[in-house]
Image (cartoon, rainbow, N blue to C red):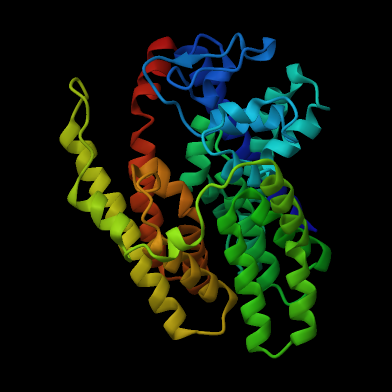
Length: 387
């Protein structure tokens, strides 16, 4: 019980740290307009509805993914036509967990949904810190290690742009904790597996890893029971598919040239616009982040080769294969994108590093986080000037 109380404190500190930063940047960089956190771009515009009229809009920008999940939270059942303002409705609407919880938290009232969305994001930050702290305690390490959850790229990006990947990062911590405990709470572990694919499709890799482990141990009955955790996901995906247009087939992913996206970004670095301070510095950090992903792939595959029946090792391998096969230009566009998408891989390695005391396994996370954190420089300057 003491471990859980200490872990709860760590989780609260994580959530308070994120909320404190958001209060500062909204106050001093966005004139107190909290909708700026959704990063709405002028090139997409906003729906012509009352609840969006005070939206902070970034000029000459396409914005970021948070704006789309905000619209989903305001129209989770595709009844109000807000799907027209979402760039890829079929893909985005599958990721219903965070927007859906925001809708429920706001009781479906348009004026309360944005605030509820913020609480949901902070709630997942709390859970991530809580589960990471409990995992550290279970290993005999200091529970304060759970604070490292704040350094996950998915957390930093969510704090800045309200993306949903923080939910997958948190649930990944829960999955490692419950799957690694001998007396894992069945209800909690099952709930995590049911939730992860509703955050984004990549969460299904944790379901697959769980099934593979049980199959390797010839626990066929348990394998079927745990496989049933994807039923809520299957039902929701069917609902979305019936109400949206196709968004590309699975073969477009399978037929990608391995590592094509990675090498495309490596060979064609980002060109920063005129006026960007120290552009060479950011280019160097971009390459450091790519090096972090490359190292993660090597370490993840090596980890699996050393222990082929471990749950974390199998999950790490699956996320390595995902990164190798992902060729999407959007995913590899910049560190904010690939950093949050591949946060589960970085976290699995770091958590295994904590368990084995091999800190090299945390280096990929550090390299990617370094670049993501540098993105906050302009906002930090704005806050310091304001103070």
